[in-house]
Length: 182
Image (cartoon, rainbow, N blue to C red; front, top):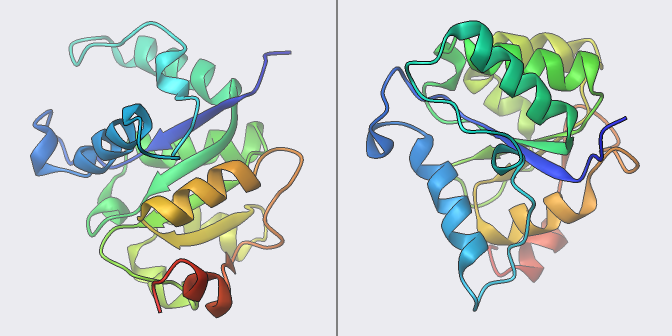
């Protein structure tokens, strides 16, 4: 049994390796928050726990690395941008393995939002693999804006032994007020 202390981050790369042209920019922002000394954002990045995979790697090699990383994770941050629902390759695979095989909670983080209190209103942004698992109550998901405070809270709060209560979990108005978002 692997030691499951990592946070796996999934995002739609939109067919590019240019970080500013896809949701990769949000992944890089998470990494920047983590290394800043004046910041309380802490997470063990599952992607740092295995050997790097280059863009030229064979699909099977990449799949094995992703499985290994997910198997070592306690939760998953799924960055849901405007084009994530279009991904038909890696994001659906990552969601399927995270929910169906690893049973880890998903922290659905939406760039461009200040608060989220009706996650069902964001259904049009969900990849099909997530939508199916939410509808079947197979996934345990906390829906949050892609902001440091909610991400810090969700990463520390939700894991294998403390799952969100439902597929449509969200933080309360009072929580957002405490962060100064409302």
